[in-house]
Length: 192
Image 1 (cartoon, one colour):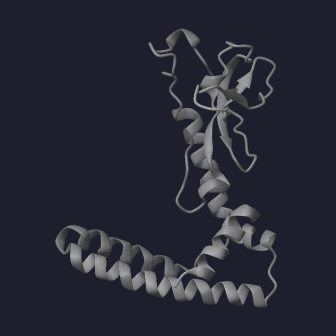
Image 2 (image 1 turned 30 degrees about the horizontal axis):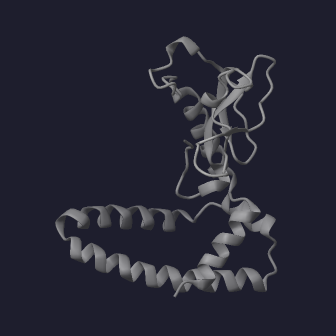
């Protein structure tokens, strides 16, 4: 099970990645779930238990879909596995390392003006309060925000296209992969 942020989605999906005894990262393994011809593929640490010709992981580290790998390694104690063969490994260390990676990514991308950041924080606090105090008013506010963000999103996509900004430039500014940039821009341009 991976870790995700709302802002970055699959561009920065994290997990506790397996590390073999020689320090290398194993290739994905396929799991037969017994239903049909589809074989599930995974890179999660627990699949590298040395059974069924799979390599055996000795350590885990934070890992991200963007290619980042944590430098700190955490040993796996295979004797601490639970009854169904899944995991009891504490993955808080790799998750904390990945969370710091996300902080570093956020520091590199285009910052919002401080006034807008403050406004968004105040708006979030007010909407949070409305959800319990006046849920119908919160729903009305959300509908109004969806209309505004839909219009602004379309206009921003058109402006970026007019400036002929590349997917790489937009991705760097937003902290997204080029694939996720295309998906997000398409989503914004199609919103009504």
